[in-house]
Image 1: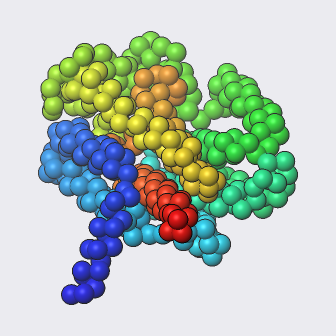
Image 2: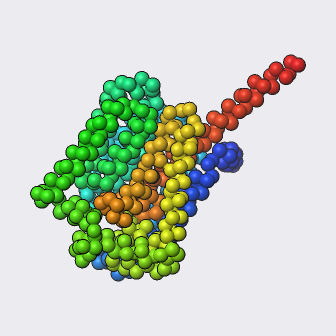
Length: 410
C-alpha cells in the first residue's frame, strides 16, 4: 500500500513538469488518426480488399489501431513520467540500443517480409515490425550522445566521431538494401539535420551532400531514359509531372488522390462520406489517409492536422533553444526533423510534389511500427521538456537561496 502511495506521489511531483500542450497535441492527433483509420478502412475491410480477399469486420483495422494507440500511450507515459534522461547518457545503454537495432536490421535482410517491393518487415504474428522505424529513434539518441560528448572539438575535427559515422552509414546501407527508399531518405534527413544544427563540418559535408544529390538526379535521369530503372520507381517518376495523362494507368492512384483533395472543398463531404476510399485509392488507411481527411473534413480538417503536426515541430525547436545542454538540444532537433520530414514526404507524395515513397503520415496513418516509433520520439521530447523545467526550477531555487543568505545576516 505504501509503495502505491509513493508511486502516485512521484507521479504527482513529475506531473508539474510535463509539457501539457505537447502531450495534448499528441493525444488529439492519435485520436484523429483512430477515427480516420476506421472511416478509411471500414468498407474495404468488409469487402476483403485489404486482407487478401478475406472479408473481415468493418472495425478490424480500427481495433488493431486502437491496440497500437493504447500501447503507444503506455510507452509515452512510461518514458515521460518514469524515466530519467540521464539513462540515455550512459555508454552501455547506447551500446545495447544500437546492438539490438543492428541485429533487427540484419534479421530483416534474412527473414524480412516483402511488402510493395520493400523487404522491410519482420512478421511477429500480432504485427509486422519495421526495424528501420526504430532505427530513427536509436540514431537520434546515439548521435545526440556522441556529439554532445565531443563538443566543441568535433566541429572542426570530424574524425573524432569517425567510428560512429561508419556505424551510421552501415545501418543506413542496410535499410537501403531492404529497397526502402522512403525510409532511407528520412533517416538521412534526420542525420544531416542534427549534424548541421551543431555545425559539425558543415563545409565538409555540404559539398559531398550536394554532389551526391546531383549524382543521384543524373543517375536517376539516365536510368529513366535507358529503361534500367525498376518499373515501380519509373512509374512514380513518370506520373509526377502530370498524373492525369495516365489516369487509367500508372497515374490512376495519384490522379484520384488529387481529385479527392479537390472534392473535399472547404468543409468536406462529411465524416465517413469519402468516395475515393471505396477502391480508388490504394490502402487509404495508410499512405493516403490525408486524402480521406481532406475529402471528408475539407481544407479546414486538413489544415487542422497540419497545424497540430507543425506545433510539435515548432515546440521541439523552442525547447532546443531553451536548454544549454547539447544532448537535450540534439534530441529535440532529431525529433523535430523526424516528424517534420515524414509529414512533408507524405503530403508531398500524395499531392504530386515529390514521388510517392510509401511513408505514413505521423500519428494518423495505420501502422504499429510507425506509431510505436513516433510515440517513443514524443516520449523523449516530453522527457527532455520535463528535465528542462526541472533544471530551471532548481536554478531558480538556488538563485533564491543565494539572495536569501545575505538577508539572514542583516
